[in-house]
Image (cartoon, rainbow, N blue to C red; front, side, top):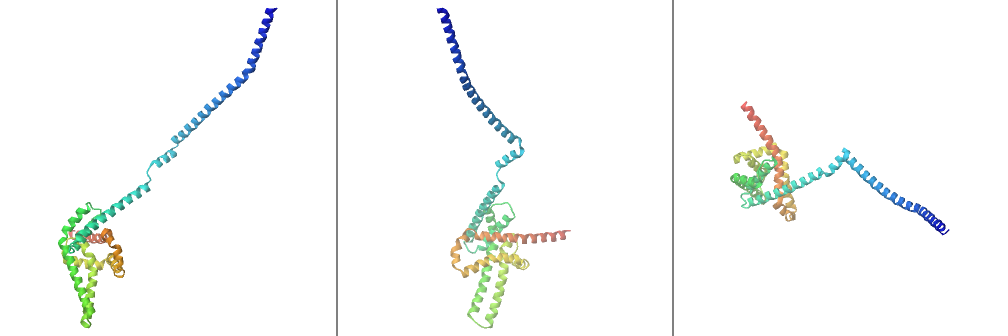
Length: 294
């Protein structure tokens, strides 16, 4: 009986253990299933995100429009590049004009060579407008030496001419009578002729080799045949003279600009105007030579 009880008791204990094991197993299974599902969800989400990113990359790689858009973003903006190049050209031009203005002032220091310095400055500006090769320093020196004698002669003749006219006007102002009136009228005509001739003198000397008399004659002819050009060349200088006469303090506020850049800017504008005149003259001359040769 004792063995039977012990067996029955052991059997009962085994059954209880099995029941406990069966009772505890669902909870373990539930926990393991939850953990497994969580891991599976994480893996599936990670896989989904990876697939989405792969799909997006694939779309970017496969879509040519998007690819071109990305490439366009990497390219430099042509407008910005053009703006930078304009700023660089403007800075370079300012430096050239400043240096030419400085050389012009140095060339004028003996005072009698002011005309020569104007001829050299006109030569450099005409070459610059025509995009001819050369450097401003070398071209200025060559033109200065080439036009030295004729530039001095024309400048001194101009000063002498204006001086005689002013002396006559001063005499007429301080005297009265028929003679003074006649002298005043003659001096006025001579000054008007000078105003017409003078603006074209130095551009013609800078462009062509000719005698001084022929230069004066050609300047007078051009001033009458190219009156709009003459007016646009005279206007800046006349405006400055009138401003300084009526507002003397204006010179004190702007003298440094003449030393820096103003002379070069005005001569450059004159060279632009004279280019049209010279092109017209040279085309006409070539046509006449061609007709004579034929």
